[in-house]
Amino acid sequence: MTFGAILGQDSALQTLMRALDTGHVHHAYRFEGPPGVGKEMAAFALAQALVCERGGSRACAVCSACLRAVRLQEEEPRVPAHPDVVLLQRGLYRGRISANEATGISIEQVRRMVLERTGYRPHEGRALVFIVREAEELTVSAANALLKTLEEPGPSTYFVLITSRPHRLLDTIRSRTLPVRFSPLPDAVVARVLESRGLDPAVATVAQGSVAVALELASEDAIKEREDFVAAAYAAISARDLTPAIKFAELRRERDSLRGLLGYFAQSLALSGREQAAAPSTMHEAERSANRHRVVLAALQDVERNVSPALALEAMIYRLRQI
Image (cartoon, rainbow, N blue to C red; front, side):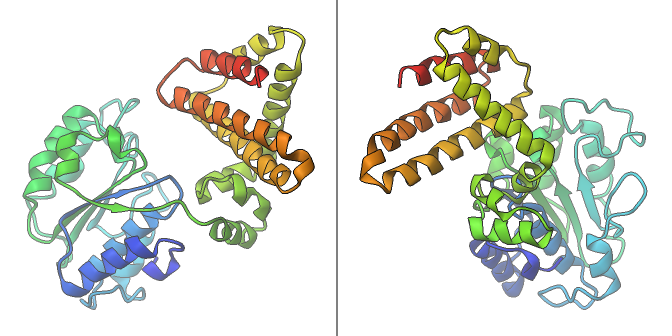
C-alpha cells in the first residue's frame, strides 16, 4: 500500500511525501474529503513509511514491518498485523471492551487502545501510528480524552484522523490536527477502478467522485433500486393529484440510502439537461431539467440537515410538479 497505489490525489500525496522527505511529519493529521477517495489508503501508506524497517523517508514495501502495517488480521478484530499501527473505529473491538458503541467511538476504546499505549515506546522502535476511521464518530468524552495526547504526543507517536464530515468534529480536535484535503476523484479514475473489477464504468458519472459509492451503485440491487426510485418520482410528478406524491414520500427509506438515491436523481437530471442543451429544439426541456435539478439538490440538502425524509420528499415532489 504505497502512495503510488493511490489515484487522483496528487496534491494530498505531495503534502505527505514532502513531509516524509524533509523529516517534518506532523504528529496529528486530519484526512478529510468524501468517502471512497483514498483517505484510508493514504493513512496506511503513511503508517507504512513511518514504521518501515529500512528507515528511509519512504516505505520499501517489502520488509516485514511494511507488509504487516497494511495487512489486516484474518480473525476479529480486523486490525493491522503490525503492533505499532493501531486502528480505532466504532464497534471494532466488540468483545474486547465492555462499552456499548452503538452511537460512537467510546472513551473506553480511547483509553484502552490509545492512552494506555502512548506512555510507552513503540514495540519495534520506529514509530507508533494511530489511525481513527470515521473520526467524526468520536463521542464527546472520547474526543476530550484525546485532546492532551493530540497536543503533546509522546516521541515518535503519530495520529491520522479520517473523516468525511469534519464539521462534526469538536473544534478543539480540529484545532489540534493538520488538515490534508482529499478531493472527489475524476470520473475517469473511478471508471478505471470499476473496469478493473469487471463492473460497468458508466456508473462513474453518478458516483460523485467516490469509488465506494461507485462500487455500491454498480450492484444489481442498487441499480434496480435507483431506477425504481426515479420511475416512482416521475410518476408522482406527472400524476393528476398529490396522492402518488404522498405515497412516494411515505415509503420507508433510511437517511443514508435516501441521500444516494437523491444524488442519483440529481445527477441523471444534470446529464439529461446537458444532452438536451446540445440541440436547439430541446432547449426548453434543458431548462426544465436544470430547474428540477436545483429542486432535487435542495431536497438533498434538507435531508442532510436532518429534515424528516418524508417531508423532504413530499416538498420535493410538490415543487417538481410546478416546473
